[in-house]
Image (cartoon, rainbow, N blue to C red; front, side, top):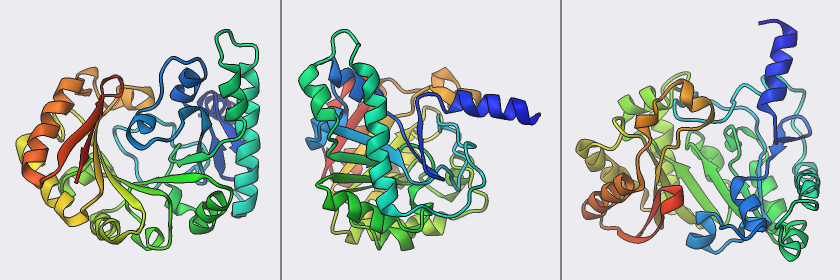
Length: 300
């Protein structure tokens, strides 16, 4: 591919993103936009009480150490950069980037003006946009910087860097667990080399974390929803002992469509049935659900 074609592809992939410094990015999510027009809110608002229109979705690492078959993000945005930006810089510039993105809503019909004004002062950050945030070496400082500004901080990780997780103190710590054993990990997450032992260590970190903890299961029909997978998930849940489990359907979106089929996307009823079977095995109970997002929340 020529350099020009590479640049064209990069610009296409970056649609809707605000690049921050050398290796970070911000993007307004679908639910922020819907919330601004009073058309609904993210399941995180329903489950955990955060406000969708005041949530800043960002990443401090536009790079990843896995090539998951179900990922719908463009993961080849940045391969090389010079030096790591400071946490203070990333926080300040991320807020400015969010405000630039919000500026386009002033002329949009149906926008709730009060909510739009509030959105300019975000108080929740989802560190989960794209890539693996624990690759950023100053992640604990970044979270502390957001915390000092009065943000609640939700950190989502693939669990491949337990040493970094031990140093972080977010409001809520997610470990995203799609695989149920090492074989499925190699097939679904496609790491450069197997790091299943690291993920097992992260489950121990989750068990001992001071933060509120969530184990997120991304469910893919014909890949990880069978009965033997439920048995193995129950063992991993017992190891991690999270406060909550999110059982969420894989969504047939973006780049994942190059690797999976529409039929691999579970219906909400499939997720609910899986969750009921899982609850019987692991001692968690179903607390809530969000049908439009195809997600079920289980509570310890």
